Image (cartoon, helix red, strand yellow):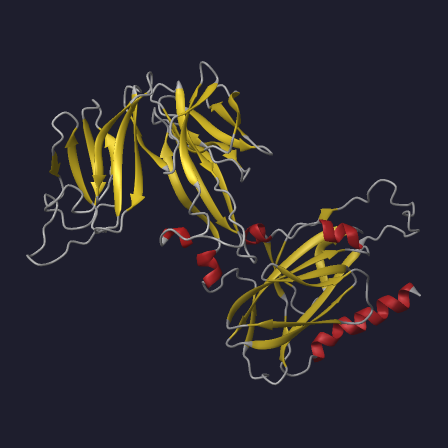
Length: 473
């Protein structure tokens, strides 16, 4: 019986000499080295469903090695159907070829083999043959203009491996011109541009030795995005740590080569510090209620964070006080808190009916800058900003300015006596305005100002700088 089966299979395979017009013989491949697969323990026993172990499971569990194709050997089988160098059963062999078409078309690939196989088109499985067949197996596919990778993953069932493959355009569009090659070369596609890894951000450690790199990866096929981070040693010129947990959003501490990150629990969060040098992780704060926008003091003895105060639900009837009140969650407020690492206590710094925004921490850690803004429709730009400086020890606040129509973002100078303010041209009246008479300056034209805390005077730094300032430090 085995002799009859072998004879029939050879007749089918030799049919490639008499292939029909339009059939393209696939006899040039990139071929991997055979890998011997071993049956799992107890494979001779039936499952709880009474089923015997299926060898196709061996084939399915072996992932296609698409990244290694360029290193595979060349195979030109010509008219020979026996694949050389493959002997024995349960040998895993992978072959890759490249189909070129001059237009979109439907195509059919015919595979004749004595092995179990799976066929992949551009990395996507389009056929799984879990049992041997004494007849050619036809696989339909759709390809567009360009070069496409076809990979066959085979698991031998005999002492030798036989394979024959042809492909042809099918359907109404049979005029497509097809070409087959083993050269791993193809046209650049939109997926090559959109998919893969891109650097979404990078920051140096305080010593400059380490670089925290945030990476955004678009997954092939799905288009979904995953985030992860890497720690790169600038002296050793290599990655030393990879943070694959997508929930970790690590950042550097201001003075030491240590990272901090937040771990969200059911109703609270914990803050951890990770030391790059010794690999130790320390829990420094626990039980914090959903902290956000964490900013550390320069000496790392405390950090400031924001906590959202959610407004009460209004039910079906809601009174609208202003335009912003129409926006969902616009009544929620953010309040500032201070967490002291020495006392392990969290202290609320601000409250009331307005949100407070942290602007900066003083270089010596003795004070913080924060602001509050409110809507005012009596004058353009319909909002007012108050800026305060709070002493961390006494928690007393001094007003730096009040009711400023065009507020700005402020940072301390290294000695803490001046502020670098970024804002619109009219942040300090007309000193940042440079337009012809009768014209209104653009509020989005961000300028830089130097504000002296003692004299309460400001000067423009970018009056003659044409582009707007995006960021400043």
